[in-house]
Length: 217
Image 1 (cartoon, rainbow, N blue to C red):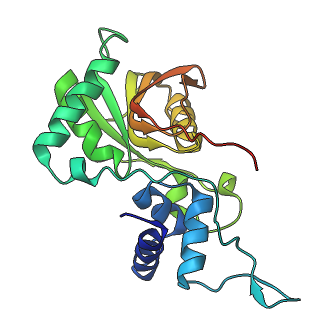
Image 2 (cartoon, rainbow, N blue to C red; image 1 turned 180 degrees about the vertical axis):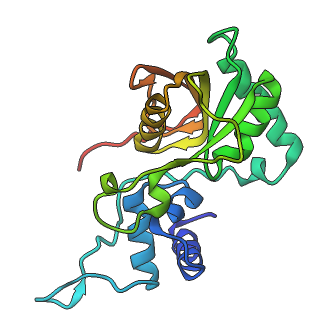
């Protein structure tokens, strides 16, 4: 994906396939607000209009966001393994007896699988609330842990995802783990758009920190 038009086209395709706006945000590694804007611009859903002008309300420039395309890594198993090894190395200093790695679905699941193999831990997965999100208050929705993988059972664990956009999904995941009695010791992602050092008291590590630098007009 090279430009915004490519993202708009991809958002339209994903919307036509029935993905929620939260899932589209996850697939394109953008915020929920950006995903909504992309879908609206694509025409896949009706755009809200200003009654006076009958023109779309969405700004032509769109929301402020950074798109991270890591498909060059994701489509190659060896590259994924190498990257997961580096991510595991960032986590390894936190606790000697950690035996569980939690991957945040969807993209965080495959990465967490490889990280868990490197660290010789069990594997769990968490599907965040945003996968159900269309519009409205995401606080009314809930995420789920898959029963097909390891349970929390009051265990210390690591948390793995592909990107941090706003930090909302990682924060939700940490809170969900604690609600199950688990203790998240550290989080790791491929790219962190916020440059966060911690979330809810849990250290955050990333291979890349993507910082937007600009000046006010």
